[in-house]
Image (tube, rainbow, N blue to C red; front, side, top):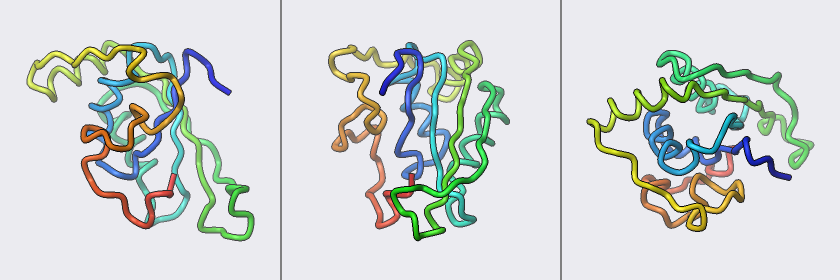
Length: 143
């Protein structure tokens, strides 16, 4: 199921919030009213809360956080409890943040055909150097 105004952000466990936000701005930002992202609910997997915290600290919009719930794909493993976050971006603030953090370099234009709205990791290409600047680890299925 998909909604044209909502995009899923996945792969946030692979990089720091600042780098993830730059990728999102370049790939999905301009056509999204809301973003959702998930995170495992364990102390060692703080990437969801860290992403939320960064967004809020930089005034990039509001984020709602769900309660933790068992991921039913792993019914017997409490380490797979997860949280869902809904981010309502402040488009003006996000654009200003992007321009400041990229030293006023314009965002690269992205053609819709090149990055279809298929809810894959960021741009949908696991070989993309921009989206996956760090190697995947055994915990890469964390979100």
